[in-house]
Amino acid sequence: MILAAGQGTRIRPLTKGMPKPMIPILGKPVLEYIIEQLARHGVREIMINVAYHHWKIENYFGDGQRWGVEIGYSYEGTREHGEIVPRPRGSAGGMRHIQDFSGFFDETTLVLCGDAIIDLDITAALAEHHAKKAIASVITLPVPKEEVKNYGVVVSDDSGRVLSFQEKPKPEEALSNFASTGIYIFEPAALDLIPKGREFDIGSELFPLLVEKGLPFYNQTRPFHWIDIGRVTDYWTVLQRVLKGEIADMKMPGKEVRPGIWVGLNTRIDWDTVNITGPVYIGSGSHIESGVTIEGPAWLGHGCGLRQGSTLVRSVLFDYTRLNPGAQFTDVIASPQYVVDRQGKTTYQGEEGTPLRWGDARA
Image (cartoon, rainbow, N blue to C red; front, top):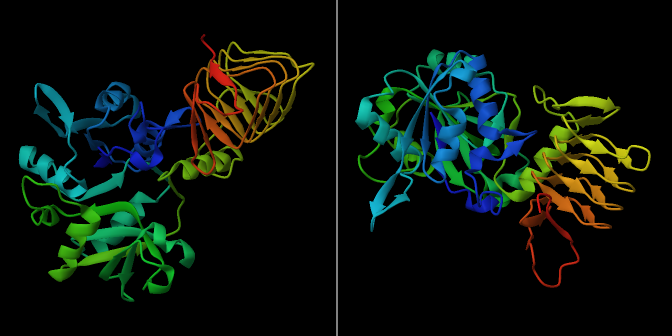
């Protein structure tokens, strides 16, 4: 089960026109990396709950055949005043809705959030879950004590049995530094505890219920990469790490035409006059004019245009973004409509007082 029904409000404006799981990393949606990882570990049946911009997920992934899996969807919404309105049921509520509809969760089920890239050894996690005869397991990772305020924290005993939770505690009040990664394993019996027909959350409601009832509920800690995209600042940081090649199984697309510089098809670049320092990817159909400077890590989506004398430093351009002549963009994520700096400050096209000059490369 992949949870993909949320609005992604904390990462706006990136989610203004797309659901959060469709945000691209190296030109591929985050959700695609998750499905590929599941397929590598033999998971063949995948349910995805959807709501906001649901058709973008459904149209892209279809029935899952391209990835060697079978994908089904559960839309969460209602009809109001003649309009179909998205209305997520909560992470646990969405599972209960599926279970009541079809009984899909008839064996051990892995649940993941659709907005994080992971390389978890799923096979080993399932083996530990079964060895402990757990009704539920939560996968955690240790985080620095000063960062616990950003996460749900799991408190467990020496055997891994979960004792309690703290939601984004102050560092001085934290009883643990093990953060929930939003990866869970459930037996069908756990779903019986979820009330029918109302919004219900896994972390804040179902987990405390499991502890209260004294059921075999365990914390698993194992080393793996967990790349969470909770905020715009996270997305910028993730892209910098990926472009530097720090994350395994995430390779630069295109052809490496010069050391550290990859390009897609049908690009036009004035190589004699430009100054490009990798790692940099330049997407298909992009045009880099004379006198342009690009300092990596940087990513240009397809159809981008960097006009004469412009400069791009440690930044990401979404498809069809144009930098005007002489423009200087540093540490930003830019689209034809907006620019977001690494602190999350957003500037929109046409906004008064901004020194940034950019637009739509198709115009």
